[in-house]
Every structure is written in structure tokens, then in C-alpha cells.
Image (cartoon, rainbow, N blue to C red):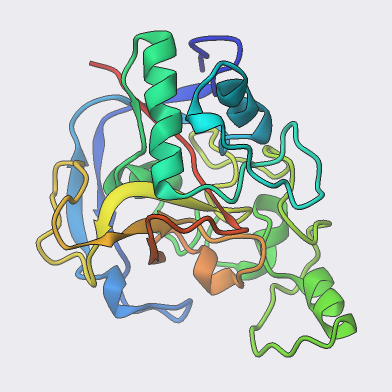
Length: 262
């Protein structure tokens, strides 16, 4: 693990390798856009943020004159180690451009393939911790019994089936509050959605197999991964994916960074 500057995100080097990207039909959930399942190769080392980018790290960008001075709302949760949210794909790209200029290194958003490779950490199970959604609350901040109770109090109807546990948080948790995956990455499942660099495509058909970002398709939406604190277990699976308009600033969407090691 390393950090290129005091205000920079902490990074871990992910070794090169191959994996099966996407999901077969399983009892744990499956959507057509998660296929076809295919082998992808990351033939190079890449560094990935240990945590989702925090409000403190974003504020450092603003304080130094970067990120166009935009200071996202913290939704009353406090700043510090809370993940930054209310940032668009375009905002996230401005942040990595600032990091690159400050450090002289090549920071960027991870490609969708790099993201899933790092999130899986060598696993082929539905979640990086295995196949049991009841284990979610040790590893991820997602939709659980506690949040279900809150929604009932607020008279909000939901048909979403929560995890059968309580993780202690009703919104985004400080980064690193849950156990990491096998590469030491925290919150790759749950907490906040994470932008990737890829254009949205409705399946993996024709996707690059070399780890690069997919730059063709419907590029107004960009791919987000990982799920968030208000999503049920099925949406926190390693293969689940969605497309969000790149200019949207969602209350549950943040990002983590990647850094080229060439």
C-alpha cells in the first residue's frame, strides 16, 4: 500500500491476472446485462484505491483550487472519512485530473473490467465473501433490517428484501468500517455506488478482454458498480452493474480511483 501525497488516496497494487467476468444464472440473482460471462485478462499491474474517495480528500482538491471549487453536500453526515457523494462522472474525472497534476502520476477512474477484477479478488462467488447474503453486515453497508425499520417509520413502502442482519448504519458509513476483500479493498460491495470509466452497454457482448475501458456504446450513461447503502443483497453482488447519466450527482454515488503503474 502507498500514498503519493499526504492528501492523496491510499492505494494498493493489484497484480496482473485473468478472471471470469460477469455472472452465470444463479439462485443468488442474475440479470441479462451481466453476461455473457467471459474471460478477461488484466495483463499489467494497476493500483486501486483502498477506500472510496472521501470528503476530506475531495475537500483537499477544492482547497488547492481544483475540482472547479465544487463542494458536495454531505447530507448532514459530517465530512472527514465519509465517502464523497453528489459527484457526477464528470466531477470524478476532474478530481483524478487534479491528482495527476499534483503527483505527476496517471490517475484515472478504473475501467469496468478492472473494477470487477479488483472487487472479486480471485473469487467467483456472488459476493467477494461467498454465497451467503446473511454475511453481508460484516463486509458491506447495504439494505438491512435496520434500514427497513426506518423506512417503515417514515411510511415508505418497499418491496425490497433486506439482508437478515443489521450493519449499524442508516446511510453511508465512514470508509473502512467493514471487512475488506482479499486484496485489502474496503466497500467494493455497498456503501456507495462507484463510477467507472466505461460507456453503458446492455451486455458484455463485444467487451474488451484486455482490461481497457469500453468507449463505445451509449456514452451518456456511464457504468456504476458495487451498490450502495440502500440496495439489497442482490444488487451488491460483484457482477451487478448499472448505467447512470454521467452528469448526475446522486446522493448515493461516489467513486474510487485507479493509477497506472507503467
